[in-house]
View 1 (cartoon, one colour):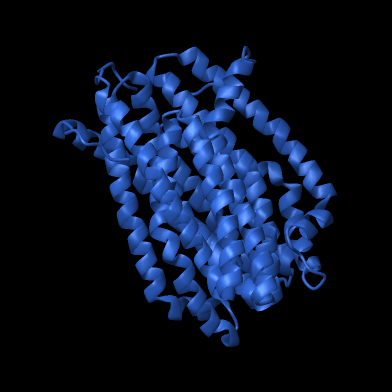
View 2 (cartoon, rainbow, N blue to C red):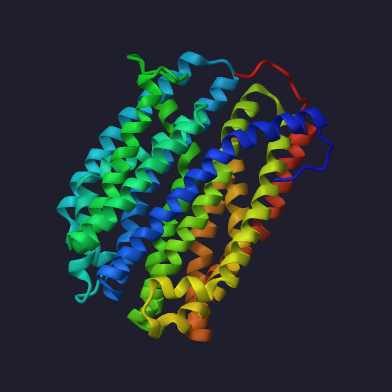
Length: 453
C-alpha cells in the first residue's frame, strides 16, 4: 500500500533495514523451497512420466488443505502476537501462542486420521481418473499419514519468523528442502519407489524442518512461551479471524487447481493437465516468493500498528509494495523469456511446444499476483479482516471461476490459460479503492513513539 504523505527519512531507513533483515533469509528459504518443488516435478517426470505428473497435480489440493489450516493458525498467531507485543501485553501474547499450539496438535492429528482413512475418495474428488488413481494415492499416502508434521512445519515457520528468528526459519526450511531433494533422488531413481517414494521424501523433509524449528525454543531464543492458563475463546477467534484471509487464499489455490484440471480435461485432455502440473508447481514457487515478501513485512506492520507507530506502518507498506512490483515483474520476464529452456526439462518432447505457449499465457498474471499477495497480507497484518476475507473470496473463488467458465467457452484452451490473468487484474482493480481508504486512515492518525521490542 502506498501513502500520499511524506515519511521521515530516518524512519524509512530504519524500516527498510528491519524489512531486509527479515526479507533476505525468507527469500533464501523460498529459493531452496523452489528447488524442492522442482525436484518433485523433475524426478516424478523422469521416473514415472506424464501420468505421474498428472497424479502429482491431482495431489496438490491435499497440500492446500493442510496448508490452509496451517497458515490460518500460523499467520493469525503471528499477527495477533505481534500486535499484542507492540501493546506490551506479554501475558496475553503467551496465552495466544499456547492456545494455537494446542489447536494445531488437535486439528492436525484429526486431519491426519481422516485423510488417511478416506484417501481414495479424496483422490477421486481432486480429479484422479482411473488411469492415474494408483499413482495419486501412492503419492498422497505417506503425506497424509504424517500430515500433522506438514501442518506444524508451515505454522511454526511463520510464528518463529514473527518471533524474531528469520535466520532459523531459513536454515530449517532449507535443510528440510535439501533432505527432500536427496531423498527424492534416492527413493525414485535409485530404489524405484515411484510416486510413494516421492511423497515419502516430501513429508520427511517437513519432519526435519519441524525438528530444527524446535531449536528456537530449546536454545531459549524465543520471546513466545507456553503457559498453563491458556484457554481463551475470544483470543482463539481473534487468531482465526486474523488468519482467515491466508487460509481462504490457500484453499482457493487448491480450488483453482481443481477447476483448471476440469476445464483442461474438457477442452483439451490429459496432456494439457500434465503441462498444467508443471505450470502450477512453478507458480507455487513464485507465489511462495510473494508470500515470503509479504510475511517478511508482517512482524514490522503488526508490531508497529499495535504500538501506534503508524509512520512505520506507512514506510513498511511502501517498501513492501516496491519490492513486490520489482520481483513479480522480474520473475514474469524470466519465465516468459526462458520458457523454451524450462519446459523441455519437465515434459516429453512432444508436449514442449504446447507447454511453451501455455507458460507464456498463464504467467501474464504474475505481476498482479505479486502485488495482490502483498496488499492482502498488509491488510491482514493490520487486522482488516472484513476487507481481506471479501477480497480473498473474490480473488480466489468468484473471479477465477467466472473467467474459466467464460473464457474456456469463448477461446477453448487459450481461454483457460488466460483466466488467471483476468482474475488477478480485476482483483488489483478492486483493491485500489480499499487500499486508498486504509491509507487515508493511516495518514490521518498520529505517529506515537513507544518503545518497540
